[in-house]
Length: 589
Ligand code: ATP
Image (cartoon, rainbow, N blue to C red; front, side, top):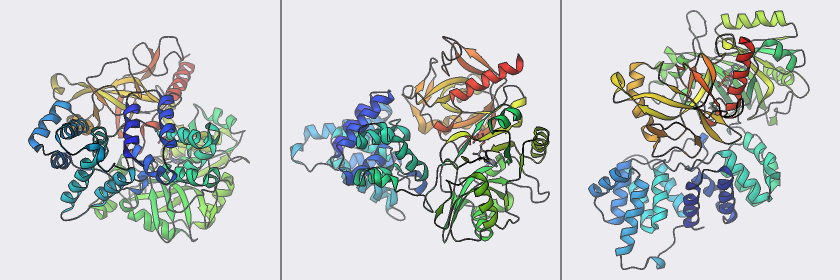
């Protein structure tokens, strides 16, 4: 398949911000893709080569990319550097320089060999995998080889992709829509395709099964050891009474541990995945060994929360402590000693070849307790099954006293299956801070920033924060956030967001405020505010409560938690803020 087709589609996608148009363009692209290449086309469109959980990163240093452009065009690196300063985008520089070259070479470009998707993917894969001595030179050669064959437009996207800056703003859900339409003619297949995605979140793989075997191929996708399953999530309600009523009068109430969600796949080999499905196995060898020795069967997938503990007192420690363990490549042994964790298991999804997600919560919990021998490092989530509100309240207080955030209520009825990737009322969370102020912390996405003044000159004075609107698939602004940062964090902000800077507001962001800097919506952080108010300036849930007004958070404060474990689509939603606004009114009134 010609890479030209992809490049032309990207260019059209870039000029729209409407999800429906993007979907149509993707459908058109998939229709032109031969089944054997569909996986590659999908990965490339997402700016990657494999699903994220495989941890293969495509990336090349800017300097090296400049070298490759220079090699392919004969223009010296200094000149390319200058052009980069002017354009701010090496993709555009590549496009322009290749264009110049084509105009001046005698050899007819039409006669050249056309660049194929397969060739682009193959060279990208080589770039991602090149290691050790001489690897930089090799990466540069692979890239230059592609640029030699590329049209100017192709060069633009090749460079952006290797730099990790493709940023077409296409959500996984849009790709699922487009796949259902391209292969089913309508959105009819959507729910089945999504089911497969929830238990095997690899869009390339799903697309290939769909393209080569039809919907039957997708239906036969099963849970498999080593492939992460999308986590089941909890809804929220403002009171234990409401929760109990919603659960039909009786439920299991589990401690809500404040740590890091871990999905453990245990067999001959072990994999640990985060809530965002990143592979954490190498960062938590202690957890890996502990779960291995606690498990009495052959193969299983567990869901749980890793929580930092004070080994001297046995007390649970605040969430932040476990973040010292994340992202480490070195000093892991020392970190294990300094920040030991306990894994609290609350679910089992698969056992010795059997998918357990269709079983009820009580059945799963029973199996969990049968196959795990608890130890110092692996324990079961503490729980109470009750219909007695007074007992539940006392249990909640105990959970808080024991260092937890609150409770997660779990449905114990017939329909209490494990719903991968879903946030529904089968699980409902109840946290302590519902009683204070606006009731809860929120997780918002950083989409822009304002230049600092006075003491903050040279860094950012505030960040522009947005909530996610899943219906519209866009980010809507809620507040400017300037407090709660340490001096160190403040000074580091511009560098932290450097790679996400874009010229204009991102197509999936809706803002009525003009920020000084715009970012790709990616970084999520936790903040707490005093109150949610109606706001004429912010776009969050605009017109929902009152015509012409959105919602804003007053006096927001960064809690110190960067939510690296959340993707922007997992941030607090505009709907959740509407609910919080209404609950708050209820309380005041
Ligand atoms: P969410 O995961 O719901 O999007 P979040 O990451 O902000 O939101 P919370 O709202 O605090 O997390 O609550 C849900 C999280 O609570 C789960 O993802 C899980 O990591 C954690 N958790 C702790 N204890 C339990 C438990 N017993 N059962 C389920 N989840 C639990």
